[in-house]
Length: 174
Image 1 (tube, rainbow, N blue to C red):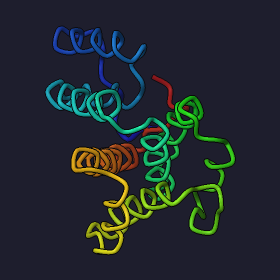
Image 2 (image 1 turned 180 degrees about the vertical axis):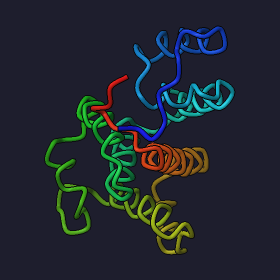
Image 3 (image 1 turned 135 degrees about the horizontal axis):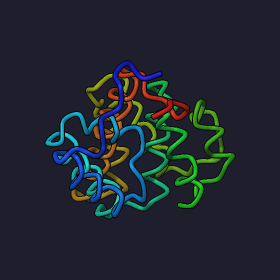
């Protein structure tokens, strides 16, 4: 059970944003139900995550592998539950999802994907990225995509930390 009650989605302050979230995402998931305690934060979050997920030039499978790896590293099951079906739709295989815990010893990831996963691990675990990890990813991506990769990793670390700090889970009752 979440540490705070979920926000009232019918107040005059939340209703316009609720309508926008439903229009863009189909429903108001628990994450946004919690964020809506602060409509300004919820709006900024929605805008940022929409840019990361829907306006980036990154391939969907790479984006979703990043999100799923961050969820694994941060022990964020809600994030993984939300994104596993999306990852599969974007072309990630179930075997790849299953191998994310130990991707370094798996042969399911090519050199480019391994560079992305190493970058994700460095940003998530150590914050500072060693030069050799950055150079490995730089071989595969230009400046725009490097910014988008970095923003995606940072954004989903933010998501998992928010979810876990407030104990938000899929099976919570509204």
